[in-house]
Structures are given as C-alpha cells and as structure tokens.
Amino acid sequence: MFPYFQSNSESISNGICIILALVSVKLYTSFDFNCPCLPQYNKLYSLGVMIVPPIILFFLGVLVNRHTGVMMDEWMRPMGNRSKNPSVVKYLFSAMLQRALLAPMVWILVTLLDGKIFICAFSVSVDPTIFSGTYISLPTAPPGLPNNTGLEVTRIMAKIPCKEDAIFRNSSFRKAVSRYVRCYSQAVGWSILLFLIVLGAMGRLIKPCFDDQATFLQTRYWSNYLDVEQKLFDETCVLHARDFARKCVVQFFEDMREDTILHLPFQPTIISVKDEWDDEDEDRLHGITKHDQVDQLLNKWYYNKPELDIYSPLPNKIGIPWPPRECTETIHTYIYIYIYI
Image 1 (cartoon, rainbow, N blue to C red):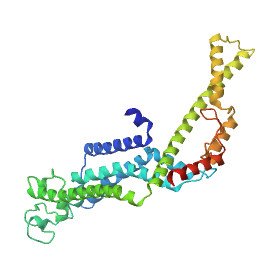
Image 2 (image 1 turned 180 degrees about the vertical axis):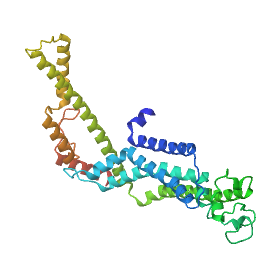
Image 3 (image 1 turned 120 degrees about the vertical axis):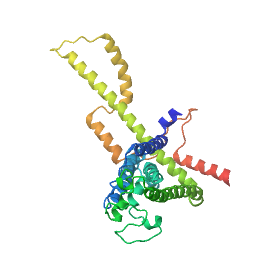
C-alpha cells in the first residue's frame, strides 16, 4: 500500500489534504478562544476566527497540491508542436479545488458544531425577552437578566460568552442564552454537512448521465500523462545533471594530473572507475555536453514540447519492421469495420 501512495500523485494529494484536515481539527481543539465580550468587537473577532484560518488552509492546500503546478504549467506554456486541451486544465483545476477546500470546510464545520464562536458573535443579537416573557425597553433589563451594574442590556448580552464574569456568576440566564445560540450554531453546521453530502451524492449519480464517459476517461488519462511526463523529465534532468557534474569533475582532475606544476598520483583504481563511467556517461548525457546545449534543450522543451506521437520505424519483437503509418491506419480501419460492422 505504501509504494502505491508513493507512486500515485493523486493518492499523495489526497493524503496531504486529509492530513491538513486533521491538522485543522487539532489546531482548533488546541486553540484557546477568548471572546472580547465587547459589543463592537465580538462579531468582528468571531467572524475573523471563523474565516481567516480557512483562507490560510485553502491557500496552503493549493500550495501543497501537485495538480496546481501541473495545471499552471499546462495553462501557461506556449503552444509549440502540442495543442492545448482546455478540458484537461479544467479537470486539474477541479481536482485541485476539491482537495484544497477540504481542510477549510472541516474548520468551519468544527467551529459551528462546537458553538463557542457562534455564541460570541451573535449573543448580542438575542432578544432577552425570550427568556423572561416580558418586554421592557432599554436600558432597563428584563426579569431574570442581571442588571445590578447599571450597564445597558447590549453590553450585558455581549458578556454572555464570558462565564467567569462577575455579572453572570451562578446565573441560569447565561446558560439559557448559550444553549439557545449553540443550538442555532449546531443546526447550521449539520445543515451544511448534510447539504455537502447530498450535493456530492447527487453529483456522483447525475454526472454520468450528462457527461460523455469516453471524454472523461480521455481527460483523466492526459491529466495523468502530464503529471507523469513532468516527473520523468525532472528525473532525467537530475540524472543528466549528476553525470554532467561527474564528467566535469573527472575532467578537472585529469587536467590537474597533466599539469606540470602539480604532480598528483593517479591511482589505477581511479582509471578503471573512470573507464567504467565513460560508457554510462555517454548514454545518459545523450550528446548534451555543453552549457549552451543544455540551455537550448531546456528552452526547446518549454517553448516547443514534442508532439504526442511516439511512432517509430524500429522493428518489432519478431524482427519485422512496422508498416508505414498510412498502412497502419488503414489496417486499424478495416479491423474496426470487421468487428463492429
């Protein structure tokens, strides 16, 4: 299972997004939320705690998602010999967006189901007469609402989240308001979770009815191809750079050995190792042995990627050369007609 996750970029992206979601839960549980208990700051501070961390988690998810780099490379690259496929870019963007939204949604749902932030934000908006049954205009407090400090009702309601405040010491009114607001918070949280689950299920069931499955398979194939191609190119560049550097270092020591000023002994083992390296270097360097050649190769790869056509006139496994392309296409046409018609 572990090698599968190592070799599959999509699985790695899923794993990273799940880890971010778990990290968001851990951050919230370890976060000591302290409400300001001031009418003009409660809602602002609470909404900031509910919105700012999800934005950070979203951009962090975009940053660590490999689909982001592949999508931007495909979108921004010049046309060259290879045409662009907008459906592939859309597929990569959709995959990146879905994974990046996981951790922010987990944070928002956890905050709503917990209710503390919701109580801090909207305790001022609660009508205290709901818990007293009698309406008395401000600044006089309704029955049951402690008002022995001379404060306005708005300021008293803003102190509902602060259970350690002396106003609400051993007060059932604060507990009643907190339960009332927490019920709304949890109702909103469960409603959002239900909506997301239903939306995902309906999308999974309805999408195959309207989308061409063959087109979807092609889009998914070429999106995976772009990822694998970029990986192989990076690995080939690393191997070429290693062999190029090794060749330069060996050549430097060869020049130093032949220098008349420094008489360095050249061990036979080094000569044998050097001879063994020469054959491997020639294969991996692919004839690219100069700085200008490397820059030209990289420049050509970016501005003029090769066409997606790997036809080769090399003989097949039984030693018979492949037929020309025109003959091959004709044979495929006949086979298709024979099978399906």
